Amino acid sequence: MANMLLRWQFKRRSQGPIRVPAIRHMVNRMADRYPPPPPSIRHTPVAANPARQLCAAEWLSVAHPQRTIVYFHGGGYFFCGLNTHRPACAYLAGAAEAQVLSVDYRLAPEHVFPAAVDDAVTWWKALLDDGIRPEDTLFAGDSAGGGLTLACLMAARDQGLPMPAGAILFSPWTDLSCSGDTMRTQAKADVMFNPDSLPEAAAFYLDGQPATTPLASPLFGDLSGLPPLMIHASRHEILLSDSTRLHDKAQQQGVVSELHLRAKLPHVWPTMIMLPEARESLKDCGHFAVRVTTPAPAAAR
Image (cartoon, rainbow, N blue to C red; front, side, top):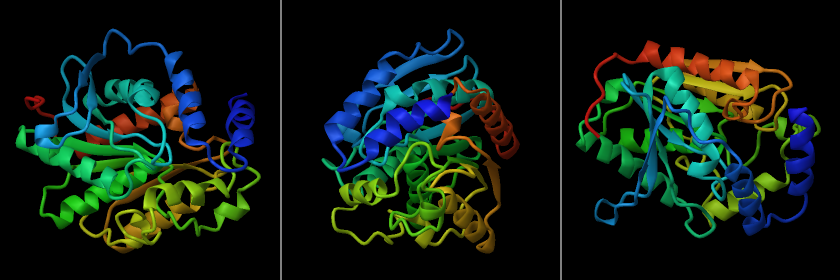
């Protein structure tokens, strides 16, 4: 039923040129219907701080968090935000006994590459300055946010910043050149996207930069030195090869990586917490978070 709804509501509407305002309006209307986080999860909005060059964000936290997760939402770098991913971040906080910082990074086409990467790295620097322990922290993201997670890791590494303990990626968009073979082989099976829409979204973000630029398309970058990766992807989505190629390259470059593939599930299904499969996957992410971090009292924010 979820696949039928997505095929009707998303894939059908993704034919033809992307209409940014219309897509943003549609997803925000959907998010307005979401229930608030459960009472066990504390929701704390964080206003933008121009003095520290920090974009807006929000915390979703259990009462006694044992670790921190920095989350970057998906949406092709041009739509979605804190409201659309609040339920998933809240569930992830509970599953991982964590405080989750969901980052409202700047979106294209108003803010092009590397604005999102700059926002992500700036928040990581701020958290480190505020006493967050990298060994008790993970990064996470879905789709474009998964690509941004990797870009933030690579940029932080190149700037000499500490690495978090791990990263969780849901159907990460790692190749903005859209050259993976599943862009063709899974075009019919994918219930959300038409292959022609992704290059247009990439162009909004790239604004003329080469699609193989590593911090825009991490698949073409150096992955060495990154922390352990947990990658989830559907066998029936056009971005499948973005995950399989990432997993293979990470292992070739000495990065610990685990790849979880599920059949007949939609793109970024772990963010759709109404699905039993999503809740199961998020619980697995919680186990991964516990495994790669050292439990300790949460640092002061």
